[in-house]
Image (cartoon, rainbow, N blue to C red):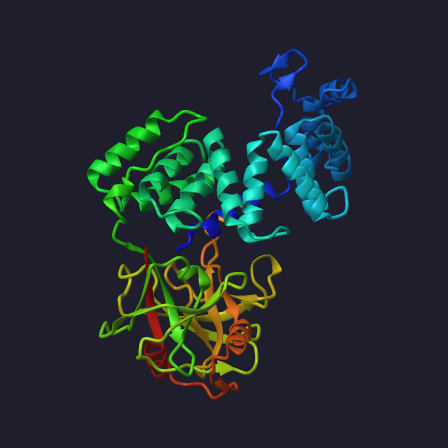
Length: 455
């Protein structure tokens, strides 16, 4: 399970939903004097040049709180606040340009305002830039700068930044893997966050705890309890002790597809792994592997074959709406089934989450660990790859509803493109006659492998 990707998605929905950020707790009497929430009172203060009031008035218009929703009016007040040095106004103006609310979409203008707010030490702007830098969205990808900005915002006490930093330490993304620091930052985040973000923080804290001894866990708990905003957290592990042995960080699924036995999976199953293991459903084989090709943007990877498994064929035509499909994978590691799990359903939507044309929605039930498994038609030809179970926490943050059994698959054409670019041969197949259920299950069991990522 890759936490960094999930947290990026979660934060994006929280910040880029319908609203802006209240950022002013300073009135005319000085810092830390709460502003009124009445639009008329804020209007009067803003008309007299109060940039904090102007930002908060913009927030009311952006969210339709106590006034009709009006993005153009919101942008006007954010522009006034930002132009007068209010960092929350600068940040909210950046969001307006990023989303095209009350103005045209202008990513460069958005970046300018995010940087200006970050320069004014506004933690949400630092985290926003960190998310853009780690994804390479509108800027060259720069993991070092992303880590720097995330740390700065986390040390200031921004809970979402602490959550993201915990994910960086857990995933070993731009930082050495460190369960102790991951535990401490996740603990701090969980003490402040509620709802889906709080659930994610609790889950990450508990995951990090699995890598700590009882004594280390006690030390981490004490350090987190004593932390104050502005203070750095220190690793529990001495560099003199040498590297810690890798532990199992996550599991996923893959299927044999290349002529030399290359196994296809999701990129988020195998990033930054010190060791990749391929295991067949029968448990007869357990071999080491490595990534031979990857595309982080499209979440695709190919790892070296393990010398076992039946190669599956890629269908020459795309999956169709309403078509019956079957998937196979290893959900929740050994908790459900060490020999794999077969799931049946239909293509329930021609696109993925929020209209993503690279994916399609399936009704087959999937769980963590199924990512990277094959999605085949009733003849056994691959039409997709399980992308992930829809992040229920992120959906809850977006819609207020904890969705169940909503899953997606990457269109198989993306994998074909990657294999063609890397010169990896594969077999194709037209849509054929339906196989019996037992025949289809046998084919998938022979062609699918469990993937373990150790760091």
